[in-house]
Image (cartoon, rainbow, N blue to C red):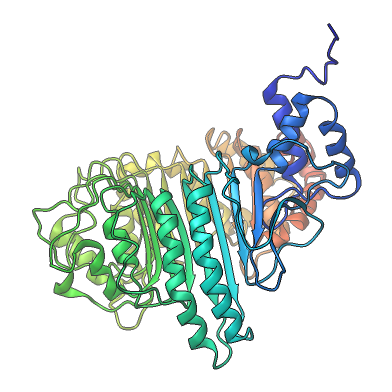
Length: 567
């Protein structure tokens, strides 16, 4: 029996890591390995022909995603594995079972470079071609208005209906789908484009919806038909991410049809007045989402809704909600989003105004003892002249009032008032358990950060602006500063480990580097520092390394050196 070399006999997980590493740093637009030429091509060829074991691993990677270009400007449609290594010949055995994702491209040509054709097709997707293990579908359709009307008629009428049938037949295991569909409006043909695409997009979506459990749809400038003939049977979607660019869109029908199965829902660019359709059907009955755990939305208007979105207060609409992300004005005039889920809510991101805080007070949404599992809080003060904004004082007090014993992450995104934050933080006894604090627009001097870390003994990660060493430390000679602070404050914190500094006007990277080194000296587990914008990160690292070699910090080089280990 032949003996295998150690390389051929590597454990599976190590061999998979090697293949993943070779692909991971050379990806094309569609996530495919870019390994056609040069050294990468040679390595792939060597692995492929080494043994059956390695050939399987290579095929699993390079056949993971397959592309079908169905643009009308090609004489035939064809499946291809993009960036197939030129040194590897086409296999004489079936490889369709390696495919995990199918990408269908139309309207803007196919990705470049020489592909390996799996099956040249004259306009037909053969019935024998099945991808049994493919669970993911990506459809990318983009139409230019310069394309002739006859082109659109021929393409849409002949190919999208056919495509819908092929998807239904050839992807029995379809689980998730991403659909991108857009028409670029530049001339008088725009209306024709929209009309020709509409009905066929419905047909295509119907097939995807009937199979997929997770849908990510980005529909731009397209009006779907309103009679919903394809959506009468609920497909049981569990996840839906939808970005819409029209106020007259039937997405609410799809959402309502899947209310009992949805676990994650994200909708953006919808007008706030249409949001009543989330919780009230056409007959005025409440719609319950018994399994929904994540709800994220962003509205294009901040108009008030008042009574038209009030729901029956005896009905719990979102009993399982854990994650709520509201990047706009609160769209309801009652506690529809919070009712009955105090025991499940863990993540909260919202924009506040006076109307919302009054609603919170009237319905006692966040009173003590409620939302006991709330771990992550992010707030912003809504900016709109048509709504009553909170004062900086009110905004800070409201945000800090949300903190519970379970809260570990707090982001305060709409204030520059350092003194108010430092004054109000001690009022909440639960700040001692916060681990991550994000204050992107507040400038702190070094004494302020020392005070903050002492006030929050569990704090591990901080994001803020930096405004200098502070007046009380300016009296200390720079060469004496490390030793002076070490005697006063060491150890400042055993938990503090990371600081992300926002580069503010008037601050320098040299001053930030000084503070980073001082934090490394005072906090035994402080090991990471970065600047924003990230474009300056490389320069900052060089400045930090240079500063670390200077006389006052050289004796602490062992501690400071840990800042560079993860770079």
